[in-house]
Length: 423
Image 1 (cartoon, rainbow, N blue to C red):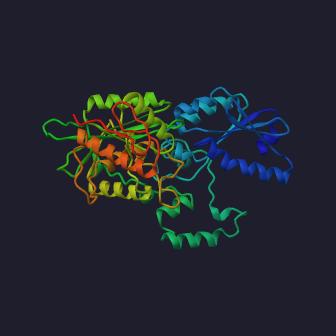
Image 2 (image 1 turned 60 degrees about the vertical axis):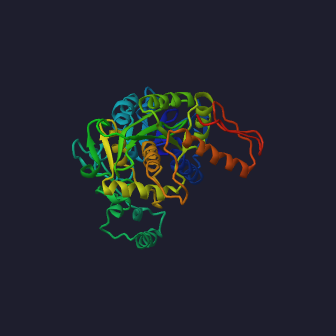
Image 3 (image 1 turned 90 degrees about the vertical axis):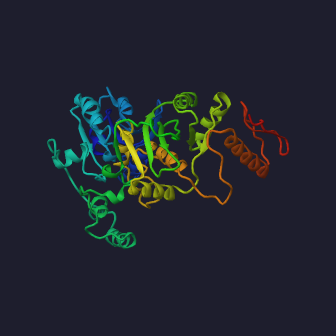
């Protein structure tokens, strides 16, 4: 507000991991301060971007920056001030955003730059360096806790109750980090306890010399977010799961994502494909089926907290082996990704697309007892027919119309069924 009042007709920017998150953080504050001071901002959109415009012509651009490519939109805009919140959740591109993009944009107006946020779960990275001076010159740094907030007079009682409920004490890493703003190693807050001594495999995966390898491709589908692909190899007689490679790409259409999957199928015949078919993923999978004949199994339906717990157990037992450098991006994501405040899922401020794809593939590769006869081998005709029969039964139950092309299941009306004959 001070920057807006002192710089009529100019522009500043407030950045978080996403535009929606940035608006959640600062939008309400603008309204509250506007009511108390009379200096009210009007929200507007230009070219798909959100701005808060003040009576003196100053505009605050409220935006998200999820990756290095996203940072480019701030390049070249003259700014008199820039604030980046949730800084550690941008650890993969924070230095580039600050040093290469925002600082040049602030040069014309001799503007200021502020990086704020809670310390991350590991004391490393650019935000850690500039706030501690370890590895670079320390920036002027200010630290406060929830107890310093004059608008939260009940904070002390609330924090004491939370500590009792969560089993925390003043020496707990998560307490020191989240509530006192101190840099500590907080392994217990990580969703996936990757341990290099147990889980790291250096070098490319080699399936020669041991027959019977099977492959599962986990796919996390996104329209505005990246599409992530994680390949897992396993042998039924072995407890080990090998994460062969992990990649992701921005801006893939359903056809573009299908092309990536087809490349995997050419390399690994009999490949199973597991994807989250809810929400936007459903449109992707429908196009895969209709245009490319690519079947994708739905991801394991157990709640996310249960899924994370299963993967955690496999990591801690050493059953999951991650090959680098082909899957190094997944390792980097696991080393940063914390639980949300309820510890029932990922913190939404951190990238998790590779983690989701890995979880789908890992759980699909794990045998589960269902009390029924054993399923046929994945990739066989009988396996496909079993899946189709289950879909047929589900269609009967819900009485819906289903159409599939290229040798799939047709249900025009309940009772009208066509199944391809086994080869």
